[in-house]
Length: 84
Image (cartoon, rainbow, N blue to C red; front, top):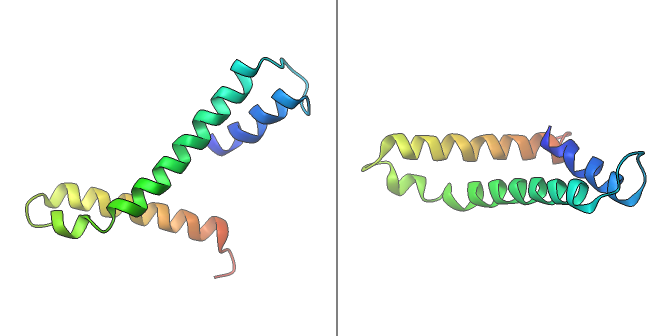
């Protein structure tokens, strides 16, 4: 759902779609969505290496980090490497 917000918001802002062309209502939500996606991808890639170190002291946190990193990796593989 969030991925749809980006092209629709930009499309409304530049006039591709019919609707209000108010930048605050179109581009700002699209920019927030894009930033959120980028941050989730960046965080998942960066913290996956730290999960192993947390395993001994905080196994539940390490498991959650590993699960998030695996979900991001699987999603990236589905979106960008369909043939692989």
